[in-house]
Amino acid sequence: MPYYIYIVTDTGTGAKKSVEHVSAYENFKLAKTEVRRLRSEAPLNEDQAYKIIFAADTAEAEQRLVAYREEPIAKEWEK
Image (tube, rainbow, N blue to C red):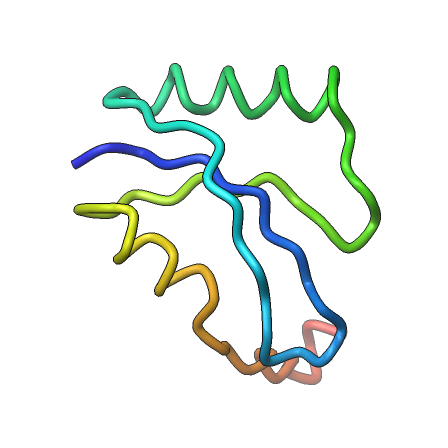
């Protein structure tokens, strides 16, 4: 399964995100190096981020990226 690089844009509502496929790599090291290069050479807006995701195909990757996840509840000792 390949590693996909996406630009994820948070629309501000918390539940909706848009994703844009950038590239795919078979090796995590190559994907990680590419994301680091993109972050330094082509910075994004505050509401956007580069993400790497491991998935069987682009449909699964996009579904996992836009899925709503609740904020974790911080324990008293973690504050």
